[in-house]
Amino acid sequence: MSLTRQQYTLIGLFSLFFAPLIMVILMRSSFWDYRPAELKNNGQLVQPPLALAIDDDLKGEWLLMYVAPGNCDDSCLNAITALRQIYKASGRQQEHLQIVVLNAAGANLQLAAKVASIDSGIDFIAPAPTATLDALKQLNAKLQAETGDQSVSQTYILDPMQNVILAYTADASPSDINKDLKRLLKWSKADDVQ
Image (cartoon, rainbow, N blue to C red; front, side, top):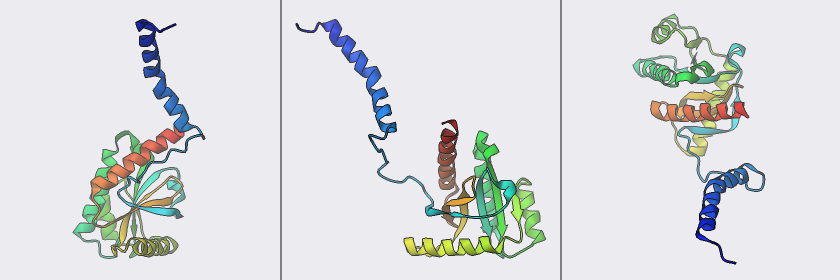
């Protein structure tokens, strides 16, 4: 018995609609361990993530953290302004995101006023906890040894448990940070649904 033209059409439609569904089920199952061939992050991935204790009030939120040098000049203020722009560009995800500026040099009222003039919602922590600054120095040394690049990371993305997961040098593009952050927020939202 041979198949008629209508039966071929029915088989074609069946495979057209159900083949992608079967592929998704296989990819999500334990039978097929799907991993992308390359990483797409623009910052330096911190492996394993570095746990920091910044502020208990900030737990549960993604953090864009900037470590301001002792002499915060125009480039430092521009970097803080770029973080504010990234925050604004995150749209509906702003409720899950906070900007933190750590002042490595201690309490500086002029810098605090400048940061507040950029955006009053930025958390300015001065003086920064010594243990946090020491951990970030060790992280920078580790990243420099891994990559051979002697640039010091100043901007970091922290997950809601305050683990540093991505680090960016001073010359990092704000659009690269924004791309990474959007991807992280998108995937963390997907994890919340499941």
